[in-house]
Length: 331
Image (cartoon, rainbow, N blue to C red; front, side, top):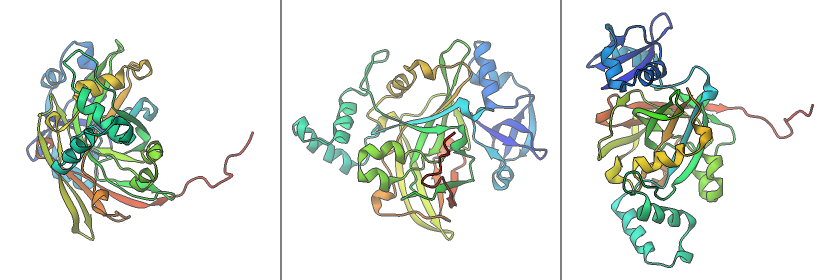
């Protein structure tokens, strides 16, 4: 089952189930978050809550996408109560990358880069038995809900950006219940837009490189995640495909289990505020930057994966102006 949030012709928010070419609207439901919180209060699964709702015929799905009326599949009415974060060095990558990792693994720890050391820790301890604590992954903060671009929208690039790089990933979508516990609604496609030129200068710039806009959706896949997933990441320029490559995800292609990644995020008490929304990017091993591609304003990204329905498409807009040096006013 897959859900979307969208705006109808009157500009009102609605939630619908993707049913072929059309959307079945959930009557009286204004947001996915409200739907999830009602399920939590009723001690029901999200799927059961959806089945209980009255459904009404909705508009053609393609029309909503083409009109730009599809919203991110989960959000919060107050953007400050939506936390966007992610984990890196979580995927095994290509056969060549794995082979390189195995060769490095025979060396002394002192000869490994910090990134390779953390990757090795993930290989060795990122998949503990359920209920046990495994190795900590790399973790980063992207922003709050204000940095989320709706499906089909453009990523505003800051004027100081050195790169406009896509990262095709899966995202976990969560709501914190009134009991202070995290509840996973499901998963969505994501593009974790980043600055790889900045990150390449020094890994300590990773935190800066992640402070960019992002997008996820258009659909929320309710329920569990298949163990193996293979999708396609593309960049189009002038309507033509500039670059495309397969990306892999799912736990069979990861060195950390989802349970371990979730534990190391939600173990922090400040992330358990009732009612909050969390969007967590799970990482990738596929980047156009690694193939020497440099995206530019006007290009369009496309992330597609059959199990998640419609592809996620986003462009890059003209650079947005930022604060100038000396722009802070003392009071």
